[in-house]
Amino acid sequence: MSAAAVIVTTPLIGAAVLALIPGHRLGARLNIGFSAATLLASLVLFGQEPLSTALFVVDAFNIYLIALTAFVGLTTSVFSAGYIAHEIAVGKLDERKLRFYHAMYQAFMFTMLLALSANNLGVMWVAVEGATLTTVLMVSLYRTAASIEAAWKYFILCGVGIALALFGTILMYMAAQPVMGPGMAAMTWTELMGHVAKISPAILNLAFVFLLIGYGTKVGLAPLHAWLPDAHAEGPTPISAVLSGLLLNVALYAVLRFKMLLAANGQAIAPGPLMIAMGLASLLLAGLMLYRRRDVKRFFAYSSIEHMGIITFAFGMGGPLANFAGLLHMAMHSLTKSAIFYAVGHAVQVTGTQRIERISGLTVSHPVLGWGLLAGVVAIAGLPPFGVFMSEFLLVTSTFAREPLLALPLVLGILVAFGALVLRVQQLCFGAPGTVEGSGVPVASVPVQGTLIPLYAHLALVLVAGVWLPGPLVAWFQTVAALLG
Image 1 (spheres, rainbow, N blue to C red):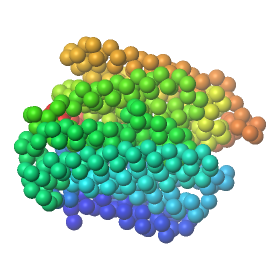
Image 2 (image 1 turned 90 degrees about the horizontal axis):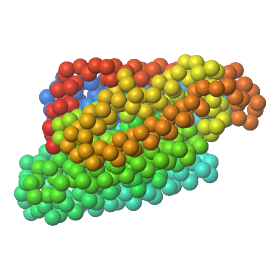
Image 3 (image 1 turned 45 degrees about the vertical axis):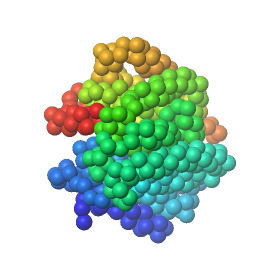
């Protein structure tokens, strides 16, 4: 069995096993164990030759995304263990729901890793749809009216988007058939890349528009973003972490694979302007919306929309430097935003509320948590010496050098979002600590349940990336940037 097959089947087996485990403590430990096994299997890929079969492909582009997904999946499972134990202690969840939750967590990891490693357009679409279904079920885990409404909204909007992506996939297959004949070859990435120059550009263009809108819905690009804040606010915080840190990347990966096909056909439209427009729209809309958010999880959900807009803009600009910046930003956003949600999850549990105005003084009441959250917000705001600053700096300088007029709205959007982050972090981290919502108990007397190691592990990696990138990693990003065109 190939390493790619092991990576995909490990979480699938984990889902089946965890569906049978009744106790939440054993379930949490096994969830961590299966996530660790998946990460170890993904690291094996770095010592192997690129893989290409009818079902799986592992190349320079997706190998780092597979490893990143497995790593964040592991750290989130560690965070989840303590988080879920607290939810049981306060009566928000019961054992039956936890067995379902752990099984769906591994199923979610399975669908994302399958989407990233699939060599078939149809299999990738099925995997992305599977990721939607598993996360819909987890968003509604609390079974409150708000969580069910959020899950339903998520299902409907992303269902429409994934239907459009299916239509675009069918169009791509129809375009390839006259050149490659019927059968699996016309649905295989590696085969398509060798024949796409002969495919009708008119159908390719139409297919890409549907695919960009369809998968763009899953990325959370404006104006297709409405599901994302609700899903983050009402679902368990570990799910918010993997939604922002991983699923958005997977959907964007699908868009970029199709962008590579268009780039290899000299007569097809340039996908860059469409991606630039959607990226800027997302950045500017999210930056403005940040000022009106009163729910801390919705606030950082809009921050995710902002950063996916930046990443989409980078890949729309294209070229070695902008693509390099986009790849680096994908990794930095995944690590930083998941770390922020780890901190937010603990903060919500100790304060008993998600309302920003009721959360204050975390650096006083819980210094390790508060300073960790502050560092995460500083990092995601794009300040040095963190890695997000490096990726944004590369993108802004590249854009100024090539298209100065496009650099103006890009910088404006980044500055608008920066102002909102600075405004809110002062409220969250400084000032006098309050009392637990609804009880009057001082927040300082409520301990953090679980470990803060995942939070600081992510922040350490983002800090190192802002100061120094290893030579092999730089060469790796440069190779992928050249592939993306």
